[in-house]
Image (cartoon, rainbow, N blue to C red; front, side):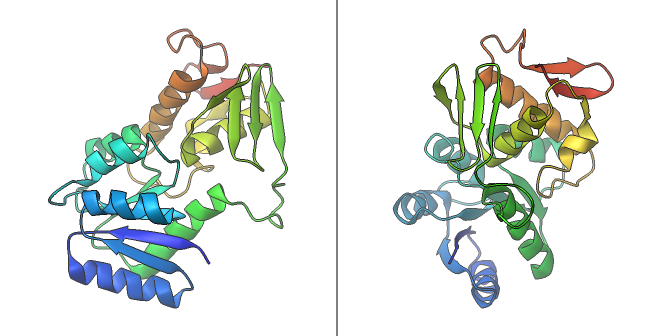
Amino acid sequence: MQTILVVDDKANVRRLVQEYLTEEGFHVLAAENGRDALFVARGEKPDLILLDIMMPEMGGYDFIRIYRQESRTPIICLTAKIEESDKVVGLELGADDYITKPFGMRELLARIRAVLRRVQPDPLDGVSTAEVLRVADVVLDRATYAVTVAEQPVNLTPSEFELLAALMRTPGRVFSRMELLDHLPGEAFEGAERTIDVHIRHLRSKIEPDAKNPRYIETVFRVGYKFCA
């Protein structure tokens, strides 16, 4: 049974989400602010976190800043904010998806399942869980969810991992931003193509010897990105 941590300062939201997801077969934990969520997440190791942004004690952004240094657990932000800049801030920090309040439970469930499929692919869906990709000195192992560059481990978020996997499967092929967006759960908000630029910038900062002069992930002007063979 997969575990989901719901973090929201409104008790009615926590209760409704917890009851619904429990009926859908999840083990659901709850916390009312980012500080408490850190304690629960560190002890219980949830499979996914639903995280409100505006909370007392410790807000969602501060939680992501701290927790992303410790874990790659996927995070879906719950927010009343609808500005693209707010969503980009969360993505910059390491969030994997956004859902805007008020939201429907069916939409929330679909987003959760989409994110979890990316992190824990079904062996029957055509993607081998034993897949290992090697291009130059970059190695991506889906079975262990690990990436190394020149034999040094690299810590990626689930979205960064999926983007890198998509690029590495066909080195030299140019992907448009919309094509790459198909490899990420959710993220279909206005201006979503900018999401790809954010993730690519993060990827480069983690795998490139010099992120300003990338040797692995190349920008193709007005088209998109490719992984250099």
